[in-house]
Length: 328
Image (cartoon, rainbow, N blue to C red):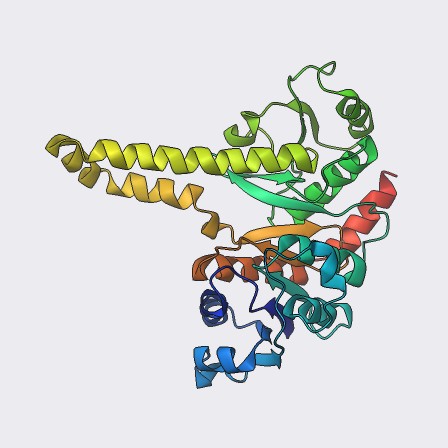
C-alpha cells in the first residue's frame, strides 16, 4: 500500500482545505494511505473516525510560513515540511505533497531526498491548457539561470513524465524561443537546440502561443521565463473571466445568452482552473514531490495527491535515470 506524506499545515488557509482534499482523494482511490504531518489538536477534529485506519497523524507544531526564508527550512527539523520530506527520505512514505512554502519544499526535497543520478538541477513542471489536451511546461520557477545542458535534462525529464504519468506516447518536445527558426534565441537556447537535436521527438523551437495551441506535448525553458509565462497566463485567464462576467450583466439579452451557454462557460472554467491539475511536480528528485498552490482548495489538493499516487506507481525515477544515461 502506497503512503503519501502530506504537509498538512503549509497552505495559506490552514489545514482545513488540505485535510478536506485528502478525504476526497481517499474516497475515490483505495490504493493509498496518508501520513498527515501537523498539529494533532488541529488535525484530529477534521478527520472522521472512519478514516482513522487510512490516515496517520505525525504530530508537530512548527510550520514554515510563506514569509520565511527557504534556506531556513533545513534548520527547522521540527517543521511539518521537514518531517514530511524526511518520511519520504527514510522510505516510510513514497511521495510528498505540500501547499506550503514552495522554495522550502524544493530545497528540502533536493537536499534531503536527493537528485536522480544524472540530474544537475531539478525542475518544476506544470500543465497548461490547450483546446483538446494539456502542454507540460518546465521549468516554471526552480532555476532562474540555466545552461544548455540543464535545458536538455529538462526536456528528457519532461518527456519521461509525459510518458509514465500522463500516459502520452512519444511526446513531442519543443524549446521555447522568440521564433521557430533554428537561428532564433539567445546563446543558451541556441546551444541547447544543438543538444536537443539528438533527442527523439524534438520539434525544434516553439513560440509562446504554441504552448496553448497543442502543437507539442512538452515545452522547455528556464525558470525565469517559465515563471513569467505561468503568471502571465494566470493573469490573462483571470482578466478574461472578469471581462465576460462584467459584459454579461449589461443587458437582459446577454444574461439570457449566458444561461443558454452555461455548459460552455462551465467547460471553459474547468479548462483554466488550476484546481483541475492539482500541483506541479518537482522533476529530478528520487521520489515524487508535488508542490500545490498556497491557496489550493480541497479539489486542488485531491488532484495533487492523485498526481503523487500516479507518479509513485510509475517507474519515473528509473526511467529518467536510464534516459539521461542514454542521451548523455
